[in-house]
Image 1: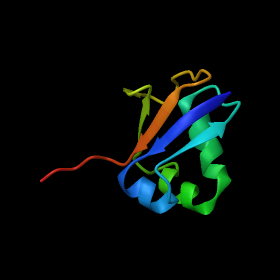
Image 2: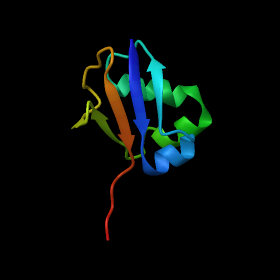
Image 3: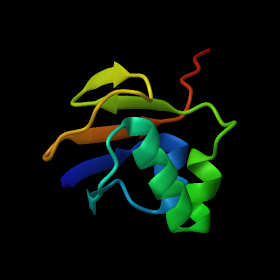
Image 4: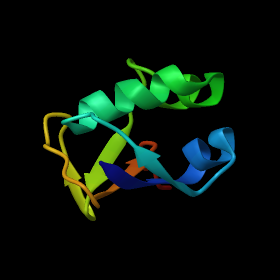
Length: 83
């Protein structure tokens, strides 16, 4: 299936792109995150397990067990802080 994947803030800066189309067999957000981590060092560093990363599926914040479907939009965000 094909997914539109968006990256925001420091994740976008580390990866060097704001969005991409990803072909995947991942069934959940967590599995997609693992697949992206395995792609290259930039993604591994910014999406790594142990790092706080928020995820949205079709513009709704979701947990890692959320199921994916062809054509979904996935977004990855670093923790949001304010001041």
